[in-house]
Structure formats: structure tokens, C-alpha cells
Image 1 (tube, rainbow, N blue to C red):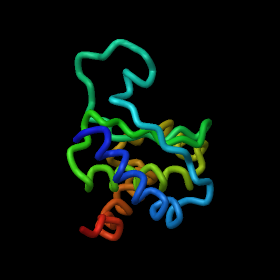
Image 2 (cartoon, rainbow, N blue to C red; image 1 turned 90 degrees about the horizontal axis):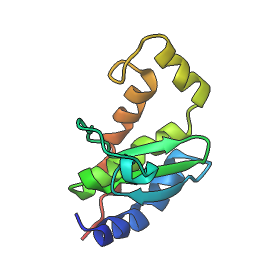
Image 3 (cartoon, rainbow, N blue to C red; image 1 turned 45 degrees about the vertical axis):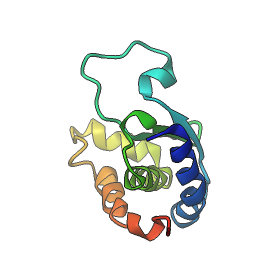
Image 4 (cartoon, one colour; image 1 turned 45 degrees about the horizontal axis):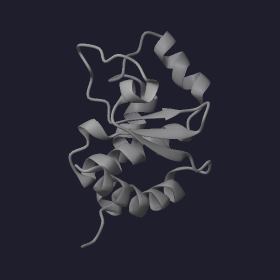
Length: 124
């Protein structure tokens, strides 16, 4: 997707998603990928990262390289807004208990909420 399309979708749907899922109203930044954002060298096995929430900056980073549809954008925003409502200390503690992404309760909750993406689909 073109950057302009992504920006337009984010501008239309994010205020609605943020209103429903967060009281901290995280800012949103768009980057090509995590390596571009961190100004680092790309790893050989880059994961398909769509987005990331940064608790310390109250920021959602959207990675445009892997966004192929309005659905991808909306799901990413919902997922990260859910994380913005979760306590970072508990989020990290679950990983210290040897849970992985698929079994992490906060990730499961965020993925469950993503299924409501059609509520925010832009009506044409």
C-alpha cells in the first residue's frame, strides 16, 4: 500500500479505535519497518511486524512494509491500543514465566479484539 493510503486510513479510523480502546490516546508514528525506525541494519530473518506499542513513549509504531490492506491497518491499531491499556510490568512478567507470543494472555486478548475490525471499516 502507498504511504498516503495508509495515512488516510489511520486518520479516519484511529480516532474511533482510540476512543473505544484506550484512555491514554497514544500517538501514532509510521515507519517502513522496525529497522528503519531504530536506524539499524536489517536482520536476515525479518519477521512480518505490523505494529508495536511503546509504553515508555505512549506511541504506536505502524510498520508499513507489511501492511497490504485496510484490514491489516485496523487490526494493527486495535491490537496496539489494547496493549496501551495493559500494564507493562505484567506484560513483561508473563514473558519471564516462559510464555511465548502464542500463549501470552495479553497477546491473546489483543488478537481477540482484532476480530472486531469490521466495526471500523471505512464505508465507501
